[in-house]
Image (tube, rainbow, N blue to C red; front, side, top):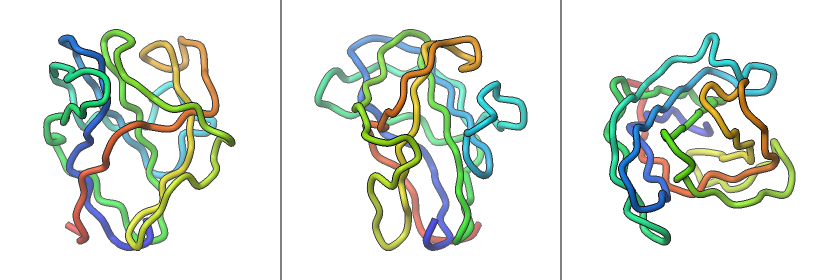
Length: 137
């Protein structure tokens, strides 16, 4: 983060249907830690996907995720079936987008939960929105 921010939830692109959704997070990056050990689950709920081209807002996290200026935070979003949409990236770990508050980097996708049990697809770019506000708690 370029400034102190508090992430409340995400909007994702998901196929039409009902899904169990989980969101996990950890300080730093996901590199060398894809088995979810040391990760914190911030959401476990059910959603109804709005369909292609439309966003589906996830419920607000159980605890907001506070990211201090200069820090990185990894997120893992998983649905009960393969309904989440993504974009193929160009380089895993490359800066994809930024603004005055936040930097967003390309990552990976996995075929299972936990990700260590699945096949990795790289690079991938999250399709959605990060709902946050400025602050430190």
